[in-house]
Image (tube, rainbow, N blue to C red; front, side):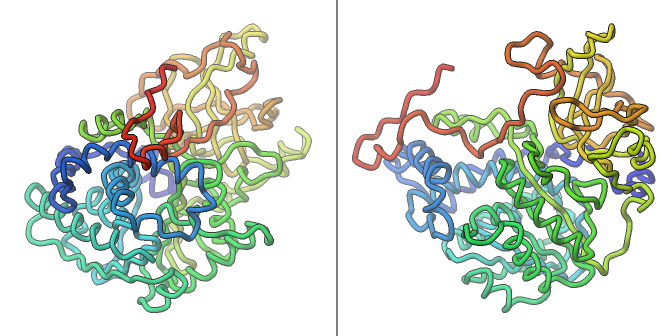
Length: 483
């Protein structure tokens, strides 16, 4: 996609660029940085894999205990987080931040809620080392001071590595640590040019008395009041169902308040993932390409390897920001319950969609005397789409922005209720060779008309046995699953 076209549509074809060589080298050397900042005795190193799995179980299975709680005060938990969860989050966040249009002004203010070990600050340095030469003030808020202090040390060590290979002169970022609950701390910092929250919303203690949508709306209204009118907000959550819902709800409140959606959406209409009975959620799945060998090995040792990484996010611009998004005429929203005749008067026949799934086979087309098609789900102004293409045509990846054309007359997939559309070729650039679909015709349990059911992506695979047994003196890890 040309730069001019990207500016016109607000749609980046590949929002998750691969890591640069310099960034990969910095992550490869991150283990040495961890050893320098958080030295471990040999006995502690031997227990590290067990501690990682115990913390993983706590975060996944004991969610009620996590919410609003300082769970990184214990040295074993902090070490496990810094060695395993932090590097994986850096990989995930760096891929995201490298594809976003973030341009805080000289002397600008960045407010980071739930900063932890300064994950987002470090990821931004890895993704955008060019910004290190710009004076920026980061106000990092968290209720637990030690992870922030250790994160600041890791950030300074990372800057030294990056400056040796990339940046002329010293980094000019100023790091301010604010030890306070976010509702209190946000009142003590300047208005933000950029407000960020990474893996933060899912750990807030939402109550069950009030609708979640109202609670998220109240949260966004509060934080938006501390952002400059032309400022930006970035919310990033795990790519599971709850994280995706929180991000979509924040987006809805932002749009209602006049904010502009810079990504991942190609439109400002209601989020189709929030529709009644919709089982999918907005998230993106990325490869682990660029993961350093030491992290892969530690993940295997802890019996928590990753085949992919996932996230949900929304990037918003304030009501006072320049309008550089899609033409409003391309954002017509049809009544998704209308008849085919009515829909022909509503949705535009083609447009841009964000791919929100992997590719899969759609064997049902064979019944019409045609070859099996390759499908993928997309999100557009017209709603949720099932976008089809013949085998061997351009491949798509989760997060890609593609052109499509609706069937004429428009029709819906019988299972997913998504509008059926045709994948159009890219307007410029070489075609990517299509990969094999993740699901082939004839596989057991596969619907003939749509994709496999949407699958949530937990941050880590659930252990086979309870690793809390390691705390009673038995230093054995559960056996790795053979499935």
